[in-house]
Image (cartoon, one colour):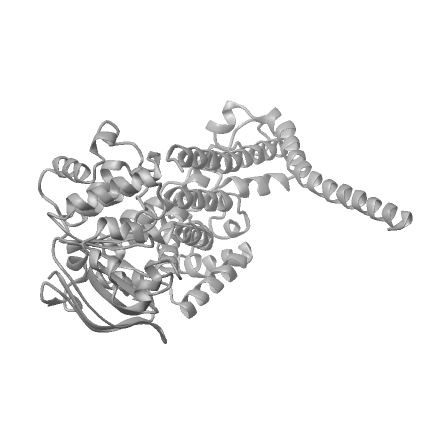
Length: 284
Length: 245
């Protein structure tokens, strides 16, 4: 080939390598930039009071977000109780019993549900729970988040169940296990690690959702006992504090952002580590 | 006779895989099924414990009698307890060695001494000495040959009357294969065995009766020494002398 063509090819190679490398690098650096910003700004304001005290009235410095942390946990608990069983059972149905048309239909609508904007979920929960109850509540927030948990759990359950080899099912059935027995005692335990990861990741994802909570859980400057009252949560607090004109509140918003991101990262990384270690100990 | 199969036709949807097979499988003997790939021997074996029921759009016509009873009239769970199966590739559950063998017992509501029964099954499968100190280790820690013997122990734990083996040694080395053939010889006293094998020498060594299948049809079936030394059908002769297959 001619020398000119060879030079053209080599330079095109180099350019594309650089471009793709820069793109990959920028993805990684964005995450680290966000982390860095949060650690720098939030770390300054993070103290013991943040985790143990209630918000103080405007004008008084100090105070914390203890109620928001507990609130987020309560909402997650509700979302888990409502969304995880439904997602799990539906995933089992799709993977083990699903016919072609019905299976396709369920999968398609699940993906659509996943794509519904979270604020629309909030409106839905608003009309479903808040209006009949005539007030904001933890329950409404839990419903909104619970619905969002379903598609993620369903898809990952289905995927991990499908990855269990058919030979395992045959082995169980050849011993006289019925279909449900096989699923419960062989297939689900085999896919357990992946399914639990999927569930934890679903929860980590909804933990940071703000929009659906704005008009369901609404927010609360105080503790929220029971499930019937408005409740504070970390993402909503960040929103409220960040757009306020008070420096002290801005500080606390950074700290809350750091805590929230920290929890999400710990959940993500932790589950992956736990799964890989669990998989390795079980052998090939 | 343990199994009496008459006029068996098997269909995967519209495609027929087995054509009018008549076969008797005698009790406490080893019957080998040989034939080239795709001749329907595995399909045939799997109809005997209705494993093909799990395949959509599959059906069969004809009669399969186990001790005189039509297997279609039987509860499939009870059938599979009486007729066990060992597969081509070892498929231990991701559980401990003990739990693998105990599985069949647990799901069938066994009330006796689990530990003794598990030990007994592992002894029958000639695996006890190798694993007795490691019963709580994962089954995946075993070698391929040990895993296959574990699968045999697991199948034996429910005391089946018949054991179906679908090319059980094809994924194993010769030494392990010899161990499993020895095992089959010992199991004959308590069990009827039917083995599908690609390995003609294995059929000649280890079985009492051999059936040769080709293109879904049963070509010839007789005592093993007779089939291998004086085959009646020219196609049988061509296959066993390696002219095709």
